[in-house]
Amino acid sequence: MTDVAKRALLSVSDKAGLLPFARSLVAQGFELVSTGGTARLLADEGLPVTRVTDVTGFPEILDGRVKTLHPAIHGGLLGDQGIPAHLQTMTEQGIEPFGLLVVNLYPFAQTLAGGGGFDACIENIDIGGPAMVRAAAKNHASVLPVCDPGDYDRVLALLEDGALTASIRRGFATKAFAHTAHYDSQISRWLQALEDRDQEPQNSQLKHESEAFPAELSFAGKLSQPLRYGENPHQRAALYRMAGNGRPGIAAGTLIQGKPLSYNNLNDADAAFELVSEFEDPAVAIIKHANPSGVALGDDLYGAYQRALACDATSAFGGIVACNRDLDGAVAAAITGIFTEVVIAPGADNTAREVFAQKPNLRLVLTGGMADPAAPDLLVKSIAGGLLVQSRDDASAGRDDFRVVSAEQPDDTMLNNLVFAQRVAKHVKSNTIVLAAGGATLGVGAGQMSRVDAAHLAIRKAASAGLDVRGAVAASDAFFPFADGISALIEAGVSAVVQPGGSLRDEEVIAAANDAGMVMVFTGLRHFRH
Image 1 (tube, rainbow, N blue to C red):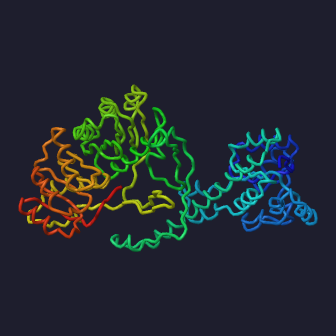
Image 2 (image 1 turned 30 degrees about the horizontal axis):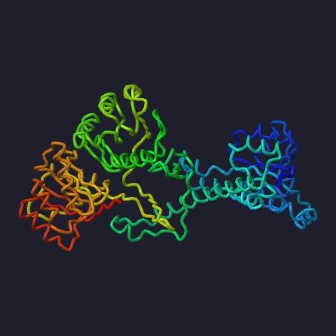
Image 3 (image 1 turned 90 degrees about the vertical axis):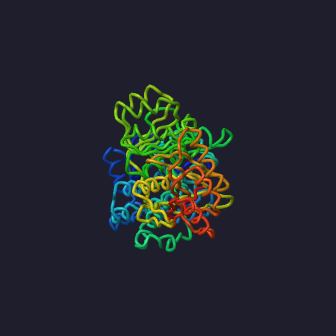
């Protein structure tokens, strides 16, 4: 139906744009009905408004928890004005129909993001609002549900023109149900996180065994920006922000300069930033196609960048650079010395910004902080007909977790390099071998179908960069199924290897290391990444 009952129910938490909108409704002949603070605002501005309590004949009770949950309200929202029997019942019960519902919900997400405690979050869970939105959305043929202040001008124009077609009404209903689903999902994820925290065992080794996934799981995403295309030009894409997720990173970062980020830019920048978040010392990662071409630590970002670039300067061209410190002028000048697509860091001083401004096509993204590599979260991947959900790989082995299985023992320097190499390997596509020395990668063998191929690739990459791997250490994301991968590393002069262990041929692999005087360390921790 294109005709609208000239009666509007307004109950909003976000009052932006409400007054001019309400004035225009009155000018179009609408009667305004409203609740609590919304009614007071309208009345204070001299607008004629009927309070919900006058409609229901019942006061708002329980600190405002109950005010619209009444047949006089929901009958007016749910009565199908195209069905004579509904209209007759409404007349008999003294229920007046609504033609327009304007509701936005209590600010649960804002309360949570602002550090609100449990009681504050509970009180910001809206009940009456979603009930009304869903009622109007169900009955959208009669009542137009409006839950976004950004739609006010469009609604006024449609009402003025009498242009509320069935298709347009369905569009508003679709948005309304998506809005309430998004809202409920935020609350569900919050409560689930509290449950997981309360039940988390003290022994981290048992964590994965006790973790339980709810029988029903929903994810709330809000459109952040449409993207020009996906991985390829024929694919459509968009970026959605996950509700209630305050993790610093590319999705929540601020684009300081440059063109909008592409799908591939976002994916690579996320991989780069998550990698450098692993380290406390100044660190730089250069990423290409979600894999690091070079990673290094340094006394400062400038030194770390130069060492990361030395690992594979060819692949760094057109890459993504991530830093775990605020950018200064020196590192900005070094980064802009070659073509770079995106730079992501927690911050940048004025000198660095001035340097980057000389390269207007370079995208600079600042996050305001670093991600916590140990913070729990869920990762989601779609497959045909379903979703694969897993916890974030938030584990990393440190020196105290290493178990030396070789006859040769590592010294402190070697242990530090093994920790570094293993943390880099955690962020490289499987199968992977990472070669490192002095807190910098020398060669990265990524995404190979066999581990021996990953070893050969890492060695070749180092050689092509003119880097000597003799005495270097190696990290493997998973165990060596055969001794051939170890043999390749031994032949290249690698002095130590860190790996999870757990192969049926561990003894054979350890024996090969011992025969060559190589140090071998087991972590018991696999880091597959697909």
